[in-house]
Length: 206
Image (cartoon, rainbow, N blue to C red):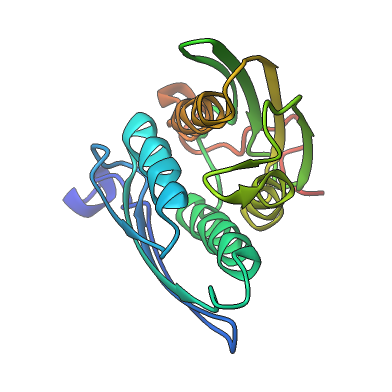
């Protein structure tokens, strides 16, 4: 066995997404330390993605330029799609993954639970009684669309539940922190199963 075979594969992805609506450049390292450089043009989205990276121990660089003169929709959606695609690429064949995780995160008055399964089968369920119609000047429908877009492109099963909370900022921040921690736990490698796909089928997304 060579030294290269002993070294773990780098789980890194680079995404360059260019459309007439947005321009996104993204770099993701699943095995980072939580370092981030994020600039989307939407301050609260920057804040939430920073929570995900820091608490998930992912290194994330993301620069987005979108048609914010229209509204926030395209930028929020395309950031979710790009981040999901980055996770999918970085996970590669998904061999050795822990695969499933559940995490809770509190934020003052609020508590959120996120359950994730990196199964290769995209599905999302978002249940939240938001305390405001919009958070960070972004309509709540767009935040939910972000999670749906991320689940679609990361090919993950994602269940989000805001258990309670009185402040919309706190509710959403709890969700992003829980999401980061759940993705961190689910994407870890299990030493006892490094060369196996984590499924009794022997394959994911089948």
